Image (tube, rainbow, N blue to C red; front, top):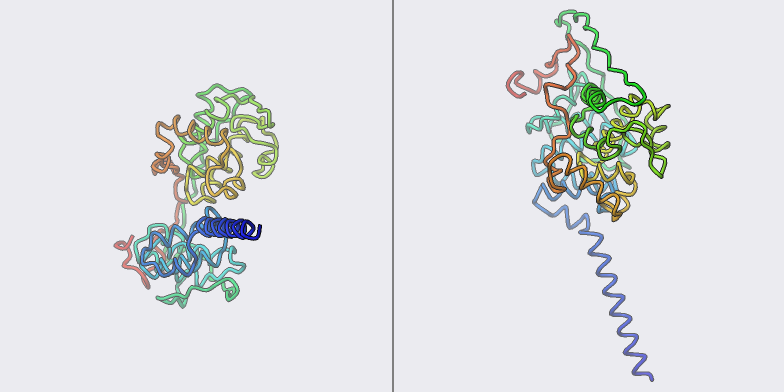
Length: 340
């Protein structure tokens, strides 16, 4: 009797140990383990996971530590991400001096997105450090920088020409009319028109009067909550519907760091479901949805990572007339015209 109980207890303890080991494995490596790595790509990937809460617990401070380790190893993207993080309010406070220091380091590492981001500030008199610190949220201080201003030598801007009016659609437009609308609006949202049209085809097959059993409405099948969230007062108005759907798709791409597969899953199931499941949720509808959009785009599901989500340069909105790319402060940090 006692021996049998002992054997049962031993089996129970073994099972508990197996479950505990499995849970530890599912949680992934600890921050301490990761920060010992000399692989900046691995550190960057885990930093993103902790920042977004996808396949790892969401933690801004964990993301800072991992981005920092990758940045110290020379990752321009990690340096950029630290700059973006400190420029925003994700960590509770906004430190633009620290943000600009990290963005400058990223720009000098030739990370292309950094220099345009720096252009929002006038850094003529800014005291930026070449080796910025990695400050956790509790230790952050709030600091701001002056906004950029036009260079004094810059000529007066010409009066901009009026942009052509966006075509208005009837309540039940033909497919070619919807396509024309998408091509005119997509660059405003930083979206590839072909991607938007693939979503519309899968969502409604270009039927502006489509309604799902879950009350998703119109061309881009907006549910009432999403329509309200993105300022759509009449989801049956094709123009408003397309604008709202594109605003949501752009938000999802930004939220999931440009990962189109996760953005599409979020469009179908909601971003919280993607975060909760650490990837594409295990719903047959959502999994099939992602595959169908990929098929319309002419790629496999894995091939979605190669799809260009932003518009071609020729279709992107033109820069405002009179705005100079190079500012006075840039001569402090860059060889203007060479560094890009």
